[in-house]
Structures are given as C-alpha cells and as structure tokens.
Image 1 (cartoon, rainbow, N blue to C red):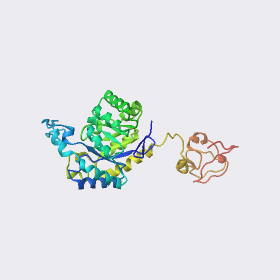
Image 2: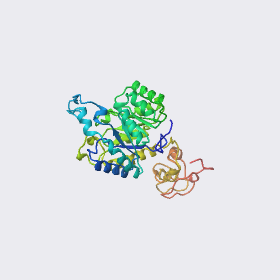
Image 3: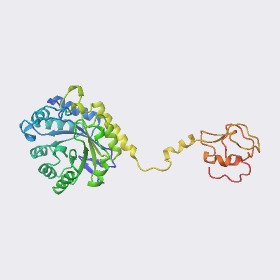
Image 4: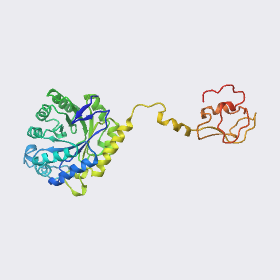
Length: 356
C-alpha cells in the first residue's frame, strides 16, 4: 500500500489517521461563525479543514426540482436550488478562512463541484482536492482536478464498483498519482447498519491506494472502527452547536466530540500494532501475577502431596499449574510450611529441576 503526502502529512496504513473537519454549510452564512469553526477545528487537533466550493448556479439550475424522500431527508420539501443557495460558502470568504487555518497550522482545501471551482481553488494554492460522492461520475471535473497534479480524495457514496473503477481510471489517466478513496454512505445522517466498514480493506486491495471513511453517522464509533479496518483518512462534518441549526448540523460533531474523534482514532491506530503471539517485554513483570502451586497446609518430610495440602494460587513464583497432576502423589523431600511456593527440589527423589 503506497504512502502519499497531503500538504506534508504522510497518509497511509503506517501513520495515524488523517482527520478532516468538514465545515460544509454549518457557517450559517456568517463569516464570523466560519472563522470560529476554524478555531474550533484547530483546538480539536484535526489535520485539515475542508470547505465546499460551489454556488447554486454552478451546481444546479432553478428547475423547480424538489427533494421528496417521504420524511427521510433533512431537506424534505426544498428545491435543490434553494438548498444550495442556503448552504454554499461564498467564494470571497475562502481566502480569509484558509488564512485563518494556516495561522493555526491547519491544512485547508475544498471540494470543487465544477471546473470553475477548480480554477478558483488553484488561485488559492490548495494542497489537495476532495471529490464529493455525487460528483464521482463527473468525468470532466475529475480530469480537471487530476491535471493539477495534487492529491485527490474521492468519496465513493452512491456508486457501483464499476463506477468507482471508472473514476479511478479517469483520474489516473489524467495525471493523478496520489489518490485516496473514502468509503461513504450517502445518506444524511447515515445509519451504522448501512455503513459497511468491511468494504474498506476490499477497496484498498482492489485499487491499491489508501482508503478512509467519510462518516455521516452520529458519534465517533464508526470512525474508530474504520481505523481498525485500515482507514487512513477520516472525514467528519462539524459545527459549533447542533442546536444552532444549519443544513448539516443534525449529523455534525460538536467541538468536544471532534476532539474525541481525533484522540480515539489515534488510539485505535496505536492499538493495531503488529501480530503478537508471545509475551511482550512490557508484560514480563506481570507474569508474577499468574497462578502457581503453593503449600496450603503444613507438610512433614516424606508426606504425600495432595489436593488437601496444596493449592493453585497467585503469585506465580512456584511450579506452574500444568504440573499439578505430576506433583500430586509425590512426597515432600523436607518439611514445608503453608504459604511456601512449591519447587522441584521440594519433591522427594527429584535430582534436577525440570523446566517450570
């Protein structure tokens, strides 16, 4: 699995997951709130801040198409055009938002939704591009992004395997050399039951690139589990407070939860470690707390050792419990006091101590 670099951050299985905080439309059309979101993302410890770059007119037309999903959509009853007018991030804000991110040491980039957005983002020298799920079949956009030579992150939501394969081929043929795929379920919010994290290693093996998760579920559990399955990138929407409202607020993390996401995904990555089938150096001292055979009652020299005068207890400085059947019926070589760990030289007729 190749390791790629996004703005100087190594991204791959050997590195802690790269965490992207997605602002989306949670600025609620306030630049001050957008900048506060940048501050909150930085305080949470994420690696990158992401915007979405479009206008209602670059992404749609006022055709009157209305979202109808029988109460299953956050945006039920809104026209696409109306939704995008409410959710878009004004292009004139991008420079200020990116500059605030740089002041915090955060990477900042965006999801362009058409070629004009790519040209605009190039003028701001973004370090990478993200392709949203609903754009992963937009071949002209894919080619334009690939032609920049910058890393590309692609969400795979609402796409068949063949469509993902087509998108990857288009990107690579157009010059993309650093690619990340994100497993994504394009429902808002997404259910854990439809998140299907076991897809992550399959995508990684199939396409030979780092894979992550664009997570629309509530909480951080799915993201932590994704890291255990090899996710190298985690993308999560965030807001200042869900109670403030906004187009994506209901499935977005609050700052404290975003911080928890950063901490717990890094712990999950650390916990993966390597295959370990022996006693680790760090465990050696703990072996004393395992059980061993001890004298439980006074035993006279020559007396038979039985289940009545021996016990298997902690600590582990006597004969190991696996020798229990061998020891029973043997006779004591000397008088033994209760609380004494049983050793081979305490057995009558034992010339040399077998391995304990």
